[in-house]
Amino acid sequence: MVGLRFFGGVNEIGGNKILLEDDKTRILFDFGQSFTFGADYFTDWLSPRPINGLKDQFEFGLLPKIRGLYAKEQLAFTNFPYEEPEIDAIFLSHAHFDHVTHICFVDPQIPVYLGVGTKLFLESMEETSGFCDYRKHEYRTFRTGKKIKIDDVVVEPVHVDHSIPAAYGFLIHTSQGTVVYTGDLRMHGPRKDLSEEFVERAKDCEPDALICEGTRMALKEKRKNYSESHVERLSNTIVSSTDKIVFITHYSRDMDRLRSFYNVAVKNGRNIVISPKTAYLLGKLIQDEHLDLPDPLKDEHVLVYYKRKKSGTYDDSDYFLWERQFINKMVTCEYVQNNQGKLIMDLDFYQFAELIDIQPRRGSHFIHSMSEPFSEEDIQDTVLHNWLGHFGMQFHQLHASGHLNREQIGSLVAEINAKKVFPVHTENQHLFKHITRNAQMIKPENEYGI
Ligand SMILES: [Zn+2]
Image (spheres, protein in one colour):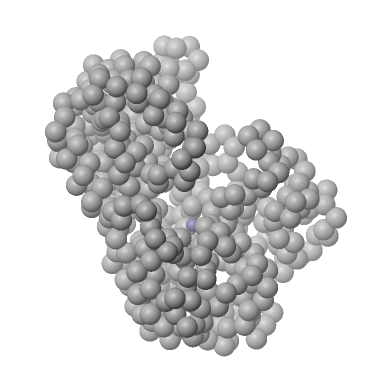
């Protein structure tokens, strides 16, 4: 019998951990961290101690006790016994935190399958962040359409459009029939053709089960339903009607958004200023010719912002080795201050102190190109607006989601027409009952046949 168990992503957005068992074969799809991970017990600097392996997580039941999954050293201080791997493979749908983070605890003997581009994202994060370490794994990369055989189960990754490149859904051919897993996807991005192809391929399999994401499954959506091209067009309106600097902030791995702002910059005869971290990521991703991104070293419209560090004199040795490769593209706060009308600058909230050195002219613009805050008492949002007020900057909210809206979920489910539908990555799984009679409500860790 083929069984599915959901260890994360149930009644929550993100943290997907889906176990498929077909006789003796056991495969995990995604092993991400919940957005609310440990929030009841840990806050700010109070966090699980890495030295303790999984002991701190197990204390509060924050990670599932799955036999033959975790690395020996991670279990050393726990009372959960180490066993040789009983999981045959892990497949990652894309490189977002809520789908990959917890692979750091996994036994390095278990192969991790992931898209070529996803691997580049993970490498870039490890190489440029002081605290990101997925640990050693036997990585095996795939591209769309490849058929990967794990015992008698065949897994076919098929590309989808999401707010990060190299995102995939999976067609999983088991001994009892096909299971389709959407990963995260959207139909309103620049590559909606990829998601359409996925739906087409999924439908052709006449699947027995569909594991479907439902991030935006809500009775009513308050946020604007923008597409990526809306964001580009509206940003262009802002940039083309000002001679002042325009700052933007967006999710660091959303390359479609970066490309939208890059296009707007070029169209308006401006240059785009990015951080060394973003430049490094771009430098990695251009290795994948399918992604069509500007080369930070060669593209004349891309400049790289260097903060004053250590010596305060922008000396090479002030910067990490990975940062130094863009030093020919360096611009400083003085340059930005003197060329405000010629620039669009990517500025993350945590880098706002740079504004003190840049001194933007009053009436400059700030485009917040991320989700709106979830609560009205969001402290970060208040602080952000205080800064904008202080410098007399104009605020704009412009964002397109990485996920299907409710109607699109309905059409996808109808189109694929699976015999059972398992809603994951959603706070409202019951609403799937309104769109299909085949919705199967799920409880964490329970086993469901297909
Ligand atoms: Zn997700």
